[in-house]
Every structure is written in structure tokens, then in C-alpha cells.
Length: 175
Image (cartoon, rainbow, N blue to C red):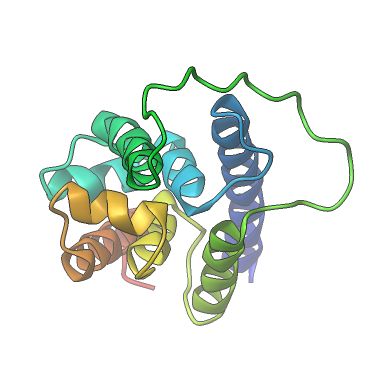
């Protein structure tokens, strides 16, 4: 019982950091609400390190993910005939208080996490977010992973391995 409460508290803290981080990444790139790609970046930043390790196990440098995302934006602009060297959008101010807002892809990440967490033990980790993003077939995050040569199914498996390792390490046994 105590372990479940502890995991729930850790998950709430992680979720808060995740949402705050995703929002910061979105606003730094001039977007009002975070998408799946911003949640991926925020997961990489989480202190548990599981998202970073999942990517590294696939041969992906976590620091390269941001550049690959930006390249997807440039490619999208170029595909509609716009100059891909447009100046960087200014960072936006923090949002007004109220309900948390995310782009549809960001909402999908959150809904996937909520569904998957109901059947899993242990606290929420960055690797859970990586797995959720990797299952998305469309969007900037999906195109980014494909452009980086990442197989989505293998990334899900790598993320799940990180979750298993973290759970085993934290409890001494697999939950």
C-alpha cells in the first residue's frame, strides 16, 4: 500500500515536470501549446534518465533529437514553398493560469500514458513517454524518429526494457 502511494506521488511529480518541460520547449520554439515532440524533449530532460538511456540504446544521441525536430519543421516549410531559413520565432511568455493545453499530438501522448499506466505498476518514467511517442504513426515526432533511422517497435522495446530495469532496481524484484 505504501509503495503504491509512493509511486503515485512520484508519478504526479514526474507528470508535473513533464508538462512544464514540454510547455517550455514549445514556448521556446514560438508555439503556444506543446505537441508530442515537445513531450519527447521533456522526457529526455527528466531526472530519471530512462528516456535518454532508451534512445542511447538505439544508437540515438538524445541531444540530436532537438535538431532533428527542427529539421522536420524546416522540411515542412520547404514542402509548401516557404523559405526554410525564416528567423526563429520569439519565445512566448508563460501561459495564463487555467486548464493545461496541448496540441492534439500532445493530448494523444497524455491519453496514451493514462491508458497504459492503469495496467502498469511503478512510477511514471521518461521511458513511458518515449514508448507512447514511438507508437504514434503520424506527426512531427514520428517523422523525426523515422528521419533519425529509429524503428518505432524497437524503440518501444528499448523503453520498456528501461522501465523494467528501473522497476527491478527500485524494488529489488520485478513488480
